[in-house]
Image 1: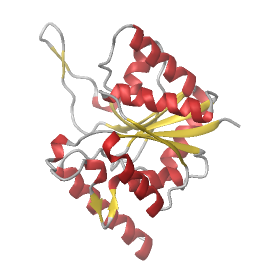
Image 2: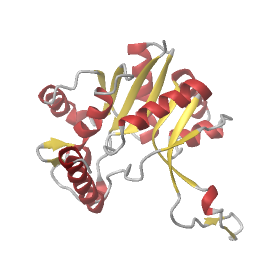
Image 3: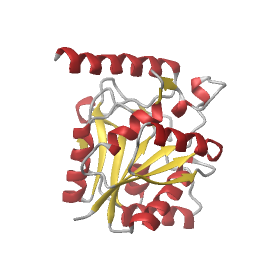
Length: 240
């Protein structure tokens, strides 16, 4: 059976979080860094066979201590990030191939997206096994306005609009091929993996994930994360 490997990006510096002491992925809630909340989801998932973490080089020793402290057992390798997010993901994918071989699925996920669910990961894997790739989305709850090159505006139908989030799951061979094509063309500006895959001719398939699957990039996001952790704890304790 094909292996499922998570490639977790923890290479950002968190400029929008306005923190001075540490990058956003290492900010703590109740004594646990955000990145650990995220890693636990994949570490505890029965279908995830291994994890690659792409980390800011100077923070790798701290991350290693956290992996030991919180008993994260599936992280097979930690690599330093690149100059851009795209380059960092590429380095993570290369590490995944070296460690686990190229006959696997990869779930690319942000280290600061700790509010996905086990079912989201399962759905991504199932869709990728069936159709070749999968991008986690949420329905659009507001109207999009797309500015065209000529200055005119296009307003897509809201019921037909989705917001791409993560994880984004691909066959490792396919996403590495896309990265190699981008590098050969000098392209280093793709906003995310599904944009790159679509550009190089892949039909993208989707699932709908939880609305709270936000990326923690601002202080407001952190407050939402804190509130959602409390909600989940109350659900476990009181059953609602």
